Amino acid sequence: MKTFSERVYDLLLTVPKGKVTTYKAIGDALGVKAYRAVGQVLKRNPDAPRIPCHRVVSSDGKIGGFMGQRKGESIAEKIVRLRNEGVFTENGKVKDFEKVLYKF
DNA sequence: TATTTGACCAAGA
DNA sequence: ATCTTGGCCAAAT
Image (tube, rainbow, N blue to C red; front, top):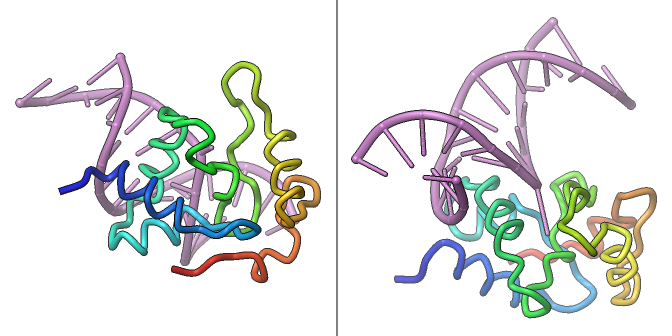
């Protein structure tokens, strides 16, 4: 039995490049309502480049909480990464959110 | 083991 | 549109 975190990571890895997902979608896909726990795990377990945390946004399409990152990292860099993958953002919110939103 | 916390969400005022 | 409230669940302390 995998742990919740592992499931989150695995699911996140299934998100194709150029797409984004939401905490809610992840929780729902896992059959759990731990939307918060998802973000919690991602925050405290920045498992590095293997986990595309920047592809996870809030349900409203806003980047949400990437701010307040740990030292060295900022939301701006994630936005740049997303843009590099084909996902554009506007003032902290994903543009064409529904179009780039990946559904499990 | 128990309590607190949090990168959330939906609904209400 | 913004702010507050309640709820939800796993991980950290």
